[in-house]
Amino acid sequence: MTAPNRIVCLTEETVETLYLLGQDDRIVGVTGYAVRPKRVRQEKPRVGAFTSADIPKILALRPDLVLTFSDLQADIAAELIRAGIEVMAFNQRDVAGILRMIRTLGRLTDCIERAEALAQSYEARIATLRNATPAHRPRVYFEEWDDPMITSIGWVSDLIDIAGGTDCFAHLRHEQSAKNRIVTSQDVIAAAPEVIVASWCGKKARPEKIAARPGWDVIPAVAQNRIIEIKSPLILQPGPAALSDGLDALIAALCPKDVPAC
Image 1: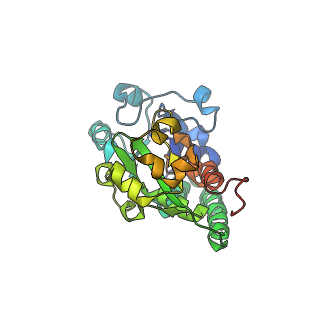
Image 2: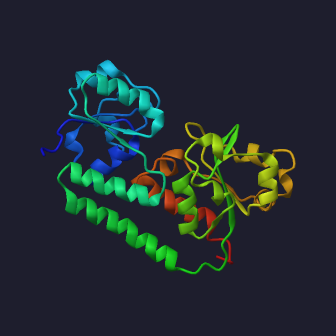
């Protein structure tokens, strides 16, 4: 099997992974949300957002493979398939899935050893963190969206556990659909999180608005001013960013240097 030489990536995690694997010369088009590494903005043409894509522009690039993610891009994938384009849809929803995605891209692009080394580097750090015994595992409410309030997307719930916290709504982590991970204000108040982490997809999170929600003054995280924003490109893309800078940001949020109990 000949490795694809003209790849279009419609989500950012495959873009970053191919760059890390030294396969960026194969990329001919990327999602408009691709920001890692920074130079991708200058190097690769933008061909779409997340749930929309410029099909004629993609076809003009003559890709031999288009990489998509999840059912939210199913219509895009179907249109490309009807146009005779080969499409591969990833659907990683947890840390294990992210690692599988990295290894799969390595096989697709004939750089299996490099992909294995990258995956193992993440696995080694995760193992080290899991083997650590934190003095305290704070209860964490992660807010992916504010209206409605959506929480506990799978890989972030995994990362909270790895970082030394306890996801207040971990029982929702296996729900693929966002509508099944909606919680109410009363749910969050009852969960009494000690840390609130907000990462609103596509817009800046507003900790002051979260703190001002009716009745939330009784939540420990609000009372102790422990509401932290993590920018969505770091944590909401299920790829290398989440396993590196995203995990670092979670560790800092859960155990800041000025908290002696950490």
